[in-house]
Image 1 (cartoon, rainbow, N blue to C red):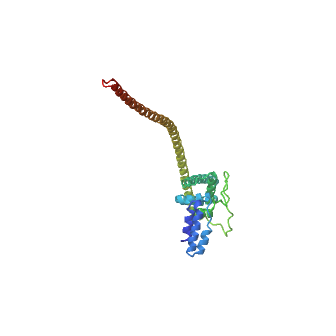
Image 2 (image 1 turned 90 degrees about the horizontal axis):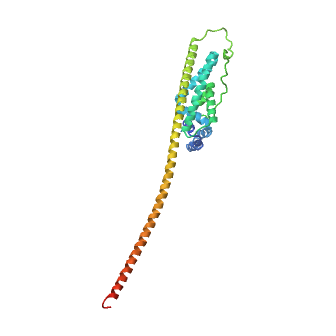
Image 3 (image 1 turned 60 degrees about the horizontal axis):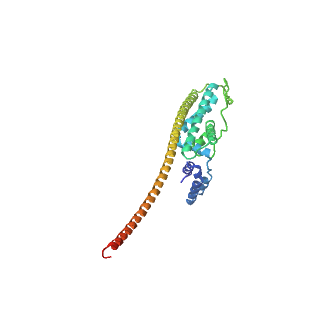
Length: 290
């Protein structure tokens, strides 16, 4: 047993399973004689629902982590290197990517048995904004062990038309130096990666919207079919109840008719015996020997 494996296992659980699993891990560490590990595990905090959803996104979609981190690097660099128009373009892509990822996280949470509302989804989106704006937040999110949602300590300020993002004042240097070609090339590559990631996010968002629209249409058609079948079931249920009532009445009539038949048969037999007795008596009375 080691701390990292235990922490990964705990934060992969559903929120309602966390506390009991943490207590069990603490007990196991104490049984093994590792008090320090037991204390570290006991200090792990149960994740809020928004934090759990954010962790779920990291664990369920690892392929989304690196592109988002690269986009964050590109955006942070863009505030130093790009003009206002380019920065606004990347900002629009950032919002599209965050929206697409938050919708994906909401679907993952629903599939995991924890549907979330708009409030929790906004907390997830705020966490993703923090990931893009703050490298420390990015590292925390990528670890998949958030106990609470993140908020950006610094943000990306709006850029006015024609304006350039402010750059930090340069440190005094003995003499002006020529731009570093290698650094410029690295920045260009980071920007290119950020643009590609943003374009991919926009494509994914369009695809998700198309899928959602198709799913909505299919759900509407399915509901119409369900409603029609429900009406048919109600009709057949009513018909079945009517037939059952008629069947019950027929059984009652059958039993009554059988009882009447048995009564009539008894009366016939009694009448036959009486007729035989009367005939015998009449024969004795009319006999010459009488």
